[in-house]
Amino acid sequence: MKFLRDKIDQIKKPFEKGQKFEKFAPAINALDTFLYVPNHTTKHGAHIRDAVDLKRTMITVVLALVPALLFGIYNAGYQHFIQLNDGVLPSFMDIFLHGLWKVLPMIIVSYAVGLGIEFAFAIFRGHEVNEGYLVSGLLIPMVMPVDLPLWMLAISVAFAVIIGKEAFGGTGMNIFNPALLARAFAFFAYPTFMSGDKIWVSEASTTDAISGETILGSLAQGKEVAYSTMDMFLGFIPGSIGETSVLAILIGAFILIATGVGSWKIMVSGVVGAALTAMMFNAVGLTALMNFDWTNHLVVGGFAFGIVFMATDPVSAAQTDKGKIIYGLLIGFFSIMIRVFNPAYPEGVMLAILLMNTLAPTIDYFVVNGNISKRKKRLAKSKQLKSA
Image 1: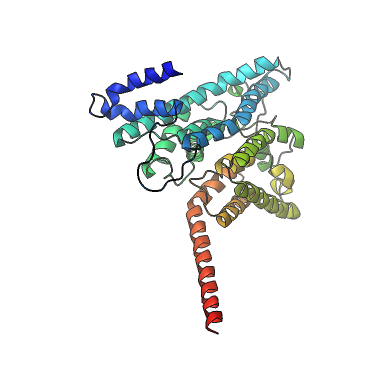
Image 2: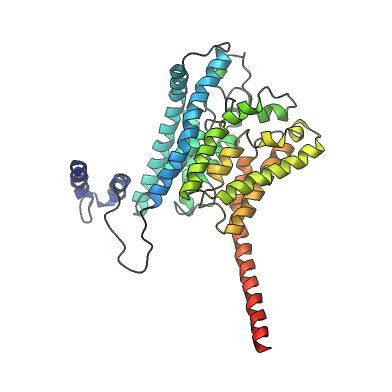
């Protein structure tokens, strides 16, 4: 590794202060800090020193996403062959390679466009490149349909990074989750490529003999569900690349909770909020979506993926402990409400999380002020007892 360290130090010399390419130092420093821990420490004030920095936190989230990503790649190939090949499946490797051929370019485009914009803003503003896009760059293609044109993905990424992130000051300053903002932009800008029964199956547009609609889309039209609960849980159903397998998502959730990166309070309260709301509609049972069993509501669509990887975003989520519980409950509640009452958009978790992103600071405000009021009352009571 000494050879690599010496080589990077040699490359960095023209970018040092006072040198010819000083302005572009943030770009080369980003490569350095990606490979190595920064070689500088704080000089003033009191700071907490820990081996876990932003880069390692982001890498932990990426590792947690790997199970859902790998299954998503396989499922992309599986849905292609099961739908377009008369149900005859080739070997595991052929299925996986087809999915990889479709998903890998989306990941490359997402990182190329997103990091390119991040580097440009870092150079323009004269600050170091932040590691926040390590996660967003992988999340964005995972919440998209497998056959979304790459140029549409690139525009969606650019919108999310520029308008949703850099316009607010960069990593740690954004109000909305960038990955969800990219999906929302694609959904409203290119609706025919983000809904229907063709977009969820690779190369489905080449034939009319296909029924690749999502379960929630079928229910919204009053159709019967052709998949078992186990299929929904394992993920062998049409859907966005990373959202179908609840089993793979649960593995990622365990990693996030075990490492302390993701908030279990948000995850658990989100599930409770969705379950209670779905139970309420099950009791009413006026439409297909209302009759859809509450357990199935938790394992279809993007709910599991959203509540584990999107709702727990530490920047756009609530920060207080009590606020996280309220935040999660409301996400679960609004997710099911949107599914049931909006047939044009039966998948509600994206809009629910974006809505709660805007309300998260308000929730924290009332929680903090509530705690202050309680302490003032306790202080006044103690003074009365002391004077008595």
